[in-house]
Amino acid sequence: MLRIFIGLSIGIVLGLLVPSWTGIGLLGTMFVTALKSIAPVLVAVLVMSSIAKADKGHGPRFAVLIALYLVSTFMAAVCAVAGSWLFPVSLELVEVGQTGNAVGSLSEVFSHLLTGMLANPIMALAEANYVAILFWSIVIGVALKKMASAATISAIHDLANVVSTVVRWIIQFAPFGVLGLAFSAVSENGFEVFSTYGHLLLLIIGCMLATSLLINPLVAFLLTRRNPYPLLFTCLKESGLSAFFTRSSAANIPINMNLCKRLGLDEDFYSVSIPLGATVNMDGAAITITVFVLALANTMGVEMTFASAVFLSMIATLGACGASGVAGGSLLLIPMASSFFGIGNDVAMQAVAIGFIIGVVQDSMETALNSSGDVFFTAIAEQYDRKKKQTDKS
Image (cartoon, rainbow, N blue to C red):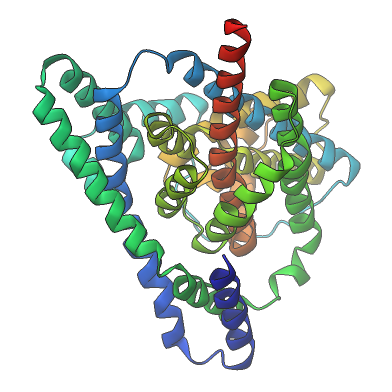
């Protein structure tokens, strides 16, 4: 980890002193590209291998994990509601150009999610469609478990180990990758993003920090009755930091799996839970959607009652779970959520444009919160399962 911080520090310094040396940023681009390229293959072979050789004891553990993912995402949206009421934000709405194709309705989000799940598995690997990769890997894994010989399952397991070894080789270059990513972030954006939309950005960052440092640990403590902060800080340091600079949940999947291995977690469990978390554990997306919708409501004079706020939190939670399957991520779900409160698409798309302006920080924080939470809740679900089994024995 010391090497990562050294690379980070050097990247920031070079970005401030010699921003014209753009070739340094190529190190970050190469690192992220390598991780993004290997991640779909890693997920596919690990999930197939885990399902094929798994016992029947993971069902309750996955039920707890999915509940943690959904509760955490909902509580993140509630936190964003509370933050927006305590520190209301108004937006300066002006005419903007086309920023992307907004999602029309909640049903469209889940329609996109379900149809994406059934995509051609080869195309899914090429396009990093993790919903489809998860679906087909589970199906093939079940088929292997039922019909394949022990030798075939062993060969799949060996292939998973080979790909995991390649991932570990790539991760060895993380200090150079972080150096390049930090250089690009500082040299291209500086600190100007804070001057125009500082209030909005601080509100989003504050809600994300509150979720990460207060709400998620509280949920974990209520479940395990153990101090969650040592685990949390490990996840933030070793998963959140890299996710902040890569700004890609896909690129962080191999890093998260490597961290789970070093934490001593069950490979059969985390090889499925980590890519699953990259799809449904979306605290940051829920916060982004909620804050922007409430900022629009405040700007347009739309009254938000307590019942409306609860409904918005539910919509943000459901929409956020489909964010990874929508081109443009959480920002393009803002018009969908806004439409439930009578805010037109033309107005909502101006908020999306503002989101792209602050996206260099907002998206980095969102990815760091989501990705570190994948490892955190995977470990918490396993701790709870072990504790429950010990209690049952005694």
